[in-house]
Length: 201
Image 1: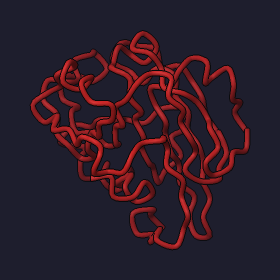
Image 2 (image 1 turned 135 degrees about the horizontal axis):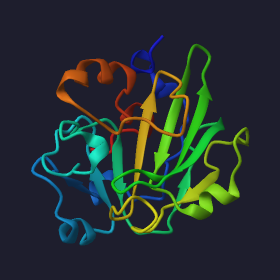
Image 3 (image 1 turned 45 degrees about the vertical axis):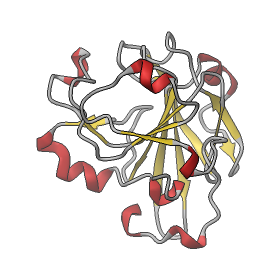
Image 4 (image 1 turned 60 degrees about the vertical axis):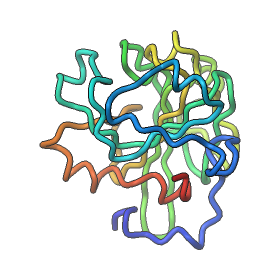
């Protein structure tokens, strides 16, 4: 069963950060690229799922074709705490330290009655990786890390990239953006994070 078909209305998930009510956060349109000064002018910003973003992903690993965003970004200040939205297990951690990459990253495994699914938390601090171990059990609402600085998280303005997967990624990584030819399959593998985060926009 795919997480995309599960009704989460009966589950009590925790927020992944201490953000305000959705109407108090700025929903960003990054379809024409990223203006860093503009993003930094908001205390809290939301980057949308399934958004085609032109000109943002210029590092070599993106191949010049990957630009459709498969997670949700929560843009805010470095050092802010990040929480597990549900009970789970830390199964992978790594510092993906190439320019343009996630930097310190965790993947948690979650089990519901009917399905197993995976959540990636990207752009964390290096201290996060020192304070948590693979195999560690975490509870809903437990702090699992903090947001990293621009120097730690792949040269991006501080934010959390949160992404769901129906498949075990096998490592502390998931393709945060995909190419057009991968898009249809990616929508099935990486469902909308609002399934568990609620209606952020």
